[in-house]
Image (cartoon, rainbow, N blue to C red):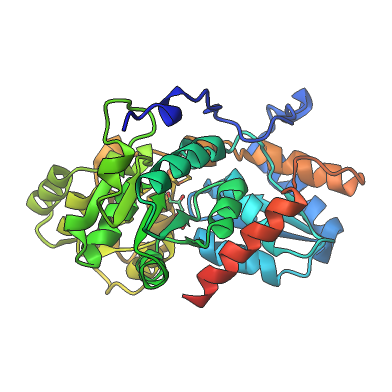
Length: 377
Ligand code: 13P
Ligand code: SF4
């Protein structure tokens, strides 16, 4: 079967999911850290219990220092759901703020300080593209039940799509259980958007012979008939920050620091995951270093801000970036500049809401179903 429809689509792979980008007013652009800290603290004091500030583990120091809670994307969603505050200020990226909006009450408002904080991997599976690929793949396997599973790192419309087709959402900590859930209810799973997490999960379940990759950008890639022969179909998305780590970085670390242990995020390539001592979400990475004995050495294979936080938070442990200076920060996470945080907080004090993330009601309802199913697994 010719693989035409998906690759011909004009998708909007723009970096920004939301088009209501508000520019930071010029008076906020050059604030000194001491003045900014004072102003953030003053605004938070006035706003009191009306706001809760959540910070992902990859946020800059100047953001996590002001956060009421710092954690991985799953923990932050749970914190958002538990929050009583009228405003949830989300230090993270768009898909995380969307998830917070999906699970908070209708009278709560989620604010993402900068709308430019869009995860490129989430943008690699556009709903239009997925719809088209789904039509092709399901037509190629008319007798098979395919269950779509999307990683938390995806937009609300994809979460809603998965729910509408009997699928669910998962995080890096429960992807294996989501696969099992899908394979109990169907014959095959389509996993989006992160092929590395998908591949790592299939290996964990002993299903490595059942993997097929669907590359929506490559007309010469496997077509629908070929991928439909397998039980684990992986969308060809990836995170640039985590793809950077290679097996030889681990070999080098072990050569330079023979006592070093290695912990990596499951968005890393399979060879890296296999060569590491511990693999897990950013929360698992934090716990691993927290639970390390004094004097232990841990090399960290994830976004560089988290490695730097761990160095600061645990001076009793030697914390090293797995690939030294080549370790990257996440450009999307970096967009949450503390000047933006100052601005959105001071605007709230003045009674104005800026950069509100609001998922459309029909998407919200369905995406909630996909998130609820995740809680079942
Ligand atoms: P966690 O869910 O582990 O926090 O990871 C989110 C993320 O964006 C990893 O790149
Ligand atoms: Fe997205 Fe990668 Fe940044 Fe995580 S680290 S938010 S997956 S680009």
